Image (cartoon, rainbow, N blue to C red):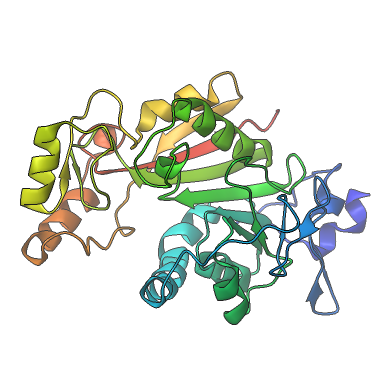
Length: 318
């Protein structure tokens, strides 16, 4: 069965022979006469009232969760970062299928699709009107239920998944900084669900602000922050927090905690070239960029790094 489709699916980023993936290769989208066929789904997704597919109630509807400023910022940021930061990492190993978890407007998925990959995006209900106006295909973009996170893909069918600035909001009551009592369990299930769809040897790149770094310019304080942390946030215009104890942010040890017992390896990657530092005061931006660009590899997974950028690889034998 694999041989019937191998010629139609070149391995991007590989100069060697095609990789033999016998059982699920026919499930990956292929190109026939210029049109793309969607990948087979793990379970039949329903079509919601707004026209997109998802594993959530058929009548689900939700108000838009973004404004014009958000859309413009996403469109400007995503395609550039996909080509400059994500694509070089994708090309380090053979990849056919890519998934952006928490894709927002989907600019990264679209940019990677233009590079020849079968690229998908998933996000919460509330973006579909924007997706529709931007021409995002219902065969490439899917909705997920925020209370029962499930991906519509078969086990082992995604070669590369990535998610930026999302996991720190998983397991919260408000999508921001109010942690649920079971927030660690929710995050564990979330990350393991992404791991489930990775192919043997597949990779996922997980990025977000580092709890072990005491300054966060992207969010307000944790809902359970101390009074002095809230006072500093008001005075400085940035969140200063304790790098120990619980916080809605996450750190490298959490990846190991959530994936414990699974066949994987993890590597800390540099965030050089990823962050624009637009929320850092203008006078400090050059220094901030130099700081992360020149950070020694030995410090990448420590509290000296303002962001986590964890590259997780699933064992090829699993």
